[in-house]
Length: 538
Image 1 (spheres, rainbow, N blue to C red):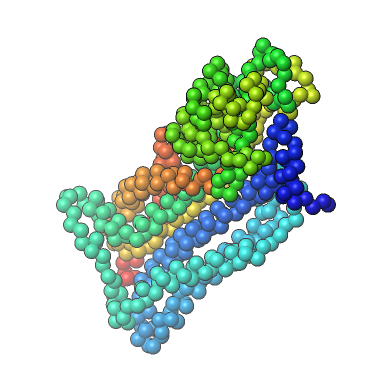
Image 2: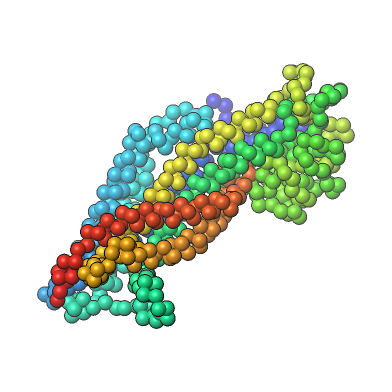
């Protein structure tokens, strides 16, 4: 091994001269070296954060069940208080079971995640996409703590905060089964429609459960948008790259040739860089003239004015008039450009400049060029070529990107649907349990199953629909604002635009999950018998 200092490397770079050096970067800035690690680091950070958020949600869901249990056992708890049992002892009793359950859940998840099958599933896309060796599996201490301690800690914290208040009543009020009624229960309904009034009062009575369902929906939609954004981004990369590529061949030259082939168009390209969110990516600065036919734009006359491709604009959030600073690491120089326009070009990160102004800026001769584009293969001297890229290569790269990301997209979207379904089913189940006496009573009065379903289940439909209409665009906006950090290490645009019908698809899908939960919950209602009225006599 030879140790070379930074100063020696910089001296070597300077000695090579601008004509002999295409690009220069250090190892810690090279996206080809850091891409695989950066991809995994981003997945880890997003996964850790998502795990905490989902765990808080389910811990709160569990607390609702505990509160329901406390309400059912109110008279028993009041008797215990009268006999001298302390609140602390009851808190331990009610918090112990969910803590054990969350610990076992975290333990099982950790075992599956660290298992040979789990590791292979998680590593599959990385090994198939990146050219990396097979690494030895490790078990970091922080992940073991995350799996074993985090779920139980959050469960204890959430349940203590929620349950403690419900155990703070006096023994007499608990024995009498007295509960504080919210002011919302006293809302006066002016409508003469009994069913509508009943649904409204029932919804207001269970407003806590309704809020949890909306929060669960929002978190599920955030996870869903993470996967759907990935799919939409990959789709746009594929389609936009293919649509933007008007040429069939790209020839990068070592030095200009005397005569340009008749079928070719000459350009000047420089590779600069931009660092954002800790990742350095290459930006192609392409010099064009007024007769350009491949990029669909015309250069601005200003010396530092540039036209940017829309992939570059979406990647860095640029608009007309913005300042855009790029770096030449070989020369340790920064170049300040001003965005004069945005063109429809999405194949990579590129900006376009008047070729004469670009030659002057980078100190090249008046007739200098180093790239030729063509609609057909050219007879070029191989010794003078750095690289040859075809349109088929660009199309293949964009297609591979889509194929590799599909397993992750399917996994994330499936998990989000499961989370939403579980939250809806559990919360509506609690509402039915709390209304068991009333359901038993109206069965005695002769109400049919269809009427009972309309009273106790369909009343939440409008609430869920309104929540979905609010949560879908909100979750999309929030995820879009966070997404640049997620793909900060990927040299691509950020076209995350959804068509209107995709929003409709999500809304319909959300309601279908809700109605599917209702179908199974109706079986729970059918198991409630009129005999429950007799069991609840004082």
